[in-house]
Length: 130
Image 1 (cartoon, helix red, strand yellow):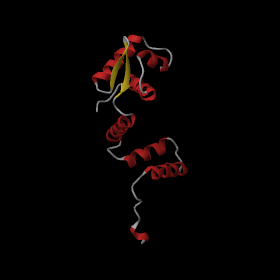
Image 2 (tube, helix red, strand yellow):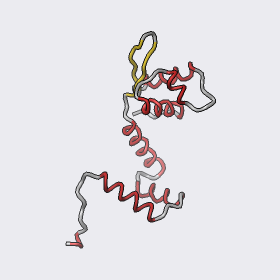
Image 3 (tube, helix red, strand yellow):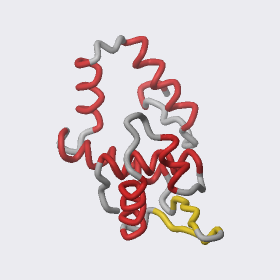
Image 4 (tube, rainbow, N blue to C red):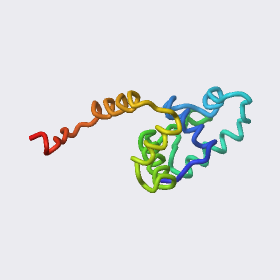
């Protein structure tokens, strides 16, 4: 999967939120100062060429919609971050964020609790507990 520029990611965030919209609706969601219509239209066409977005005809215009799921792109981006800055170690990344953001042990335990809630695999027992 290709990486996106900051501007492309900003447009994709809006498309993931709205699901299907025209260029004018994307511009409405962008912060001030609003970019020119042609600028946003060009970004959307670049996203189409990268196979992130497709369109359907609506009258004389187009409605654009994402082809790539936000979760898939997020996962790929996080993996690239971990590979490039933390030598592929999620443990190093978590440790870095804990230190840099003064994350408490309580906050980390809360994160672990959330992970356990969403993890469908059975919990592995420590062999010393048997």
